[in-house]
Image 1 (cartoon, rainbow, N blue to C red):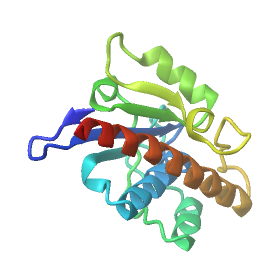
Image 2 (cartoon, one colour):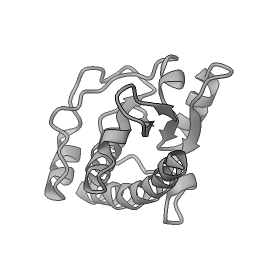
Image 3 (cartoon, rainbow, N blue to C red):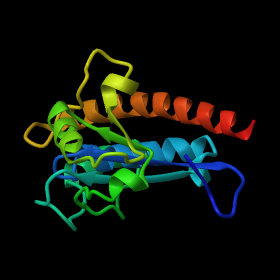
Length: 171
C-alpha cells in the first residue's frame, strides 16, 4: 500500500492477469471495480488488468465476456487488452493470476525486490473448490457465466481483505 498524494488514506493497487486479457482478467477488473464502487472504496483503489501474452493487445474484451458481464450490470466497454510489463511489479500491490500457467509466467518474470504480492486468485481469495478461473474462450455461454460466479465471490473476499488493511492503515 502507498499513500495517495491528495488523501490521508492508503491507496491499494490491484492487477488481474490472464493469458490474452480479453476474457477472464477484464471480467475480473469490471466485477471488482463495480463491487469496490458499491462499498465506497473505488477512490482508494487502482484497478487494472493485463495478459501474459501480447496477442490481443489494444483489443476490447471478447464480445461474449462483455455480453455476460452486461447481463449482470458490469461495464467492460472502455477496457483494452495490454500485456504485463516488468514495471507492473512495482506499480501494483496485488497481482492476481487467473490460472497456474499465468501464475508461473508471472513468477518467472517478477524482478527481485518488487512490491507486488503475486497470488493465484481463486486459491487465495476464492470461495469455491476451484483454484483456477477456467478459460471460457473455446466454450459456450455457460463458461462465461461460471467465470462471473467465481469472480464475484473472489472479489468479495479480496475486498474484505483490502478493506481490513485500509482500516488498519487508518489507525
